[in-house]
Image (cartoon, rainbow, N blue to C red; front, side, top):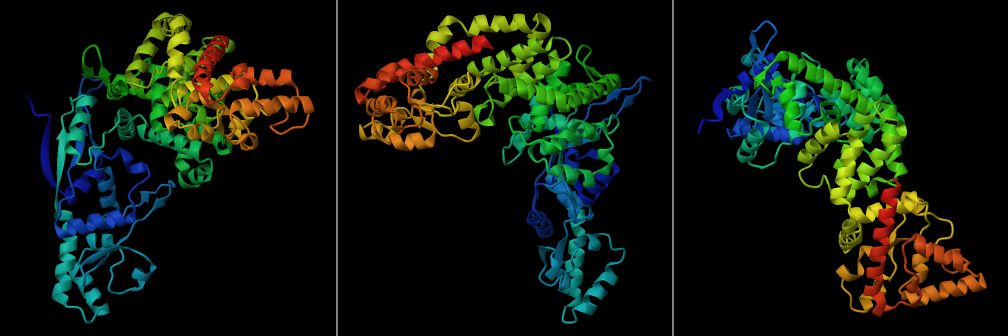
Length: 595
């Protein structure tokens, strides 16, 4: 079998010269540097002591055909070792790095030639004549003899020969060898990922999105470096609106781009229902625009891949960057983003706590963007809500999400949204699903169960009230972090010998005011429900404010609680669970079909 890579040894000095000349692209160079300064110090110490610091892995971009028929040789992209190389450029070349707040900072590593030790520079070290505050000054010093003399003049007790040895050894760090594994340019992403995992001692897999982001950042010809920033900045700003001022002050060039104007609305946005990562943004933008779901295909298209001829063409690369830029701007558009969020909330998913599948949200947004401008708003609203809920109910994207994204978007493109959705419903949401499978899936103790979340969304959409509440809705309780409580109190069931898996059942959960739950304590349902009846007769409130028995019965129905609860104790617990599971399934079915 053919060798898939070549291994070279190069000096750190030559490696850094390649970085400066742009022969090796470091796509992460504009992203936050995640190492702390202590790790940079330890890296310098390891090099000084002659310890290995691991291999770098580079993947050569494919050669692409230009319009005139000539071939352009691709750059090498560093796919592993970015933090180490960034640390080297910071410590040896003295270049600033971008910290977690996206501010450019300088990491200065100090060296003590007497003790031959390294430290992160600080105010005390700067005042201590035994320390050289910044080793980059040694690395670029034209004359070592002058530096040695200056040091010894300040440290008269120092042995000049020993100081010379220390400083020469320090400067020779640049001559230390580092291994570079260069992967063949014709390898596919899956093979590259496998090689990475096998070589990397940590076994940390790179995602398809990581490769795509590296590919984007490395292409300055089509402003990929700016697009990469836009994706990172948008996702950071969506989580931290206060980042806007840091961005505005720290990257003036970017503030003049269209991307910045499209994302500026986030500075006043605090809704956390959908805080996309760069993987989410890429996946949605790619799927909605290119009608493909596998990010490996995006990497190929950005490289100029012609899937028919299996060659690489510059025109395809240019067009792919243009389309990705356009779809990224559509993703960021305030009207698009907020309209999509409004659709999801109108389906009852008013809190991020109710959304257990980020990929269900991603595909729903991709569907929204694909339909925008081609369908009436009410059609988009209907399709997106149904698709989102259907994908949660069927766990559609819980397995191989990319494969399912690819399958779905291609079928939508050929069959149309509504016909394809109907096909899925006929295959997956039959009577058997509603009456048996869904009931069976409610036999769980997991509070974050996607089915239970859909049930809560159904209660919210129906504007139903919390259990035994007269006026306070499930929506209000969830938005204000109302608690999930037990219809059959947990302590009551525990005292009757039931274990956690038995008393913590989804069918035993309700959204209830904490003060009502406290009043109920560990009473069996037949006791506290009898007191509720007496409350309706006397009009003296103890549990909430319901004082009318018809209203009480309505409240039970709203929460899918059987009226038999009035007479239920421990002996009827299993019967209660069975009845309520069926009532919840019926409510979810009615809710879904109403969307």
